[in-house]
Amino acid sequence: MIDLKSKYGDARVWRFSVAPMMDWTDRHCRVFHRLMTRRARLYTEMLTTGAILHGDRQRLLGFDESEHPVALQLGGSDPRDLAASAKIGEDFGYDEINLNVGCPSDRVKDGRFGACLMAEPALVARGVDAMKRAVGIPVTVKCRIGIDDQDPETALDELTRAVIAAGADALIVHARKAWLNGLSPKENRDVPPLDYDRVYRLKAAWPDVPVIINGGIAGVGEAREHLGFVDGVMLGRAAYQEPWRLLAVDPELFGEAPRHTTMKDVFEAMMPYIERELMKGTRLHSITRHFVGAFHGVPGARAFRRHLAENGVKPGAGVSVLREAIALVEHRVAAPIAA
Ligand SMILES: Cc1cc2nc3c(=O)[nH]c(=O)nc-3n(C[C@H](O)[C@H](O)[C@H](O)COP(=O)(O)O)c2cc1C
Image (cartoon, rainbow, N blue to C red; front, side, top):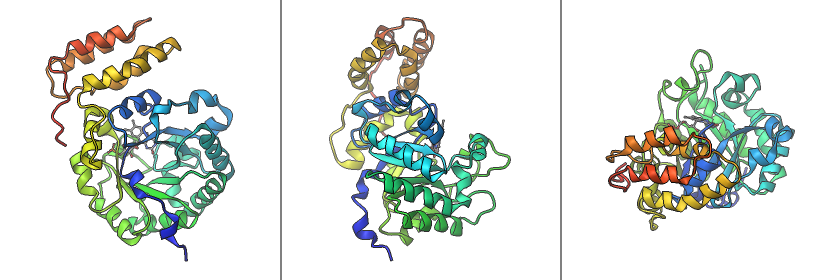
């Protein structure tokens, strides 16, 4: 019998997080998100163990100090490779290692990792065990409720039992199945129906295990409702496409003063980072591409987007392009923070 109570730390660290999203949650995006909330836990894009072990580690894993708390998401299934990659991540300063057991793309399936691992709980558990032995930071798993014709009642229980016995510190559950045959990754984020109740039942069955719910959650108000049933909420697309929603996280979910109250202030605070990055050779567009949803329902939002799209890509584009774009927004405040 595992003594769960003494094993788990404070589940509040997972109360709110922004999901790992490939091509989206790169380090520039995470710095931007961090300026809107001190408290959200941020996740990297998935990095495969192969990339970490054989690639340019500084480019792949380097991040800005301001990003903490930030978790590294791994894709892989070989326990030795996972352990080595987790250790490298810990040495880089990440606050958590998360294993991807939810990504449905073919590329991922061929490599025997991602969502197809829902069918191999013993292998996932060996990976978790190896990572737990290698690092001192929390090791977590992000999964689906099942895949294909699996019964989510048993599939999610089996995976949970296996990874918890192996030492996993929390489970993040995207509350829908992945259908591995026939749907694109994008369709797999929308088509299989959401089943929040399944995740609530998981939490009820494992009261001491931090359970975080993910999938289709539109904003901070909805997040608060889920928090009546689970320990944490992870927002993906809503956080990226409408980043102003993150301004509500600290006041509404943590009872703390917001870091900034308007997007104008956020951008002002972001300028020194952008200038430093430009000096290092980063193209302005690599950073400003994450800003497209920054103003919502605000007059001038479209002009803001267009100005950035047209001018941010020009060679040598500097912060003046961003300043000009902001000047096109009439009321430079965040849209009302209704969720
Ligand atoms: C562009 C994009 C890339 C994604 N990449 C990853 C990834 O690298 N790892 C992962 O676990 N999930 C990935 N996801 C899935 C999200 O983490 C999340 O589980 C999913 O979008 C459902 O949450 P949402 O409805 O709040 O967006 C990605 C989603 C999107 C939209």
